Image (cartoon, rainbow, N blue to C red; front, top):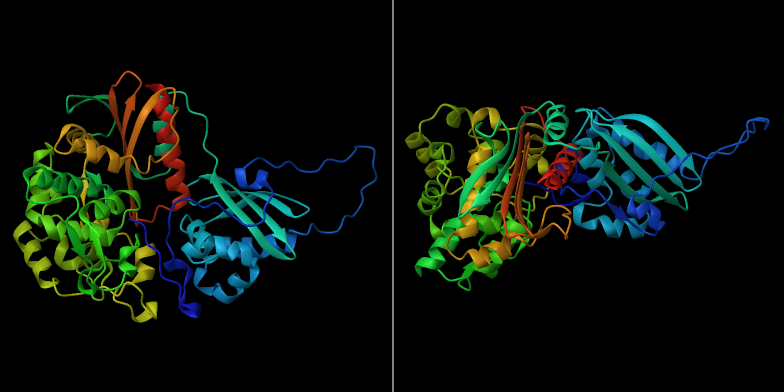
Length: 469
């Protein structure tokens, strides 16, 4: 589950901006920088006398940006100064994620950030960073006219040749980890690699697979159609990610459009529209229908609005939820049914949600969210692959393949990811050229945040493992 605090001038705070995984955004930048090509340091002859050279044009720009990225007090960062550092072109490119503050916040989510190497040459700087979880990151910057014109941050993923290599690299992140690879035949999973596949861990937005299954089952039963209209209301809007939370009251989308948005961009308001339409009981029944080994872990099945209100509402419901029974939890949900979320708050300090807490305070320890094992994730995707409306379902899942897969090996890639504070999850349904289906899943859980850079590092490792099949 990815969150982006809307941009409201001086009210923005860096720790409240948690956005999409991709950190690449370029203005008028050399294509080598845009593509992530490596930069080398300038060389000089050993016989030459040392010559004092003027600072590279990028140096003052890089100094300022790195100061913000490595600060231990992100609240001290002035959003006005951040805006002033970027060229208008770069600001435009980054507008969907809150301007330059967006990538700074993304990198800060993996704090503490340290600089381990840096080469400034002309208008370009190549910096090696290390996240608090030990992930090495290459940060490339480009300057133009004394301002930042391009920024790219990519994790440096090690070469892996076996599943064991992937296991070791994932475990080095210091989170509770599940990494499961399975062959799928006629809707049944056979595990071919198992790292804690039976451990129940958070799903974040990967839980939306169960919503998709419930919707497809309702369409197949004739109680719902893909083109049925759904109406967005302010009372039922959720927090980001997505776009529908910003849609005007009364906006109409079809069931298919909502399902597309739920999977492709993890639209939370679209998800809740679908849950409201088919009913919570139908989604819980879908969990059981997939053969889940721990139905109780997804009962009651939360809407995303409930997830945010319980975890970071003002007041939150953590203490009540933590040790409550299933029946008591249903009563808690009934008690917050009329609470709303202002999806575009004027001032985060008085917003319905604690946006700073969303960035820094995981709810996993309080049991708030959606939970399943790697084996259960395989069962869910296997069920979708052969279940009701599976042709449409596979189209929906394939909108975002979640990585690059060798087209000579793979003819299909379906995907759903999930992110919440301290939670990372991803699940892929792949079909090889022989028509064999496979499922790969990863789950990371921690009582401290897992930043987008560490997330991207883990996902790159996992998608590379498809080469071992």
